[in-house]
Length: 102
Image (tube, rainbow, N blue to C red):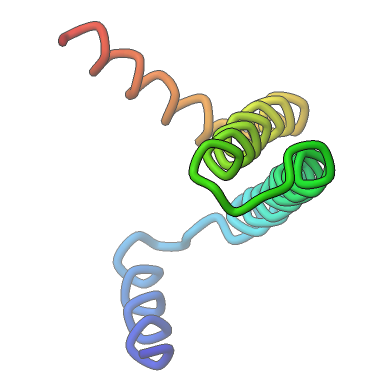
């Protein structure tokens, strides 16, 4: 599977006369950093709420889950904004446009 991806990448590079590798690498690094911040924030909130709202019943688990997801999304959005990840802004614009059409 990796070989197929690598072959397609080579063919695409030839077809487009380059892929702006520096920009792609910078975007990848920024995305990895923003994702790491999101993961750490989500994990931290889930662990903290686990101490405050322990248990395996549905309600405490749901509260921990939704709090972790919400915190993760906020952390991702803030990180993407701070790191100026243009693709994140593009994705948000697309989501906003679809919600407005509803």
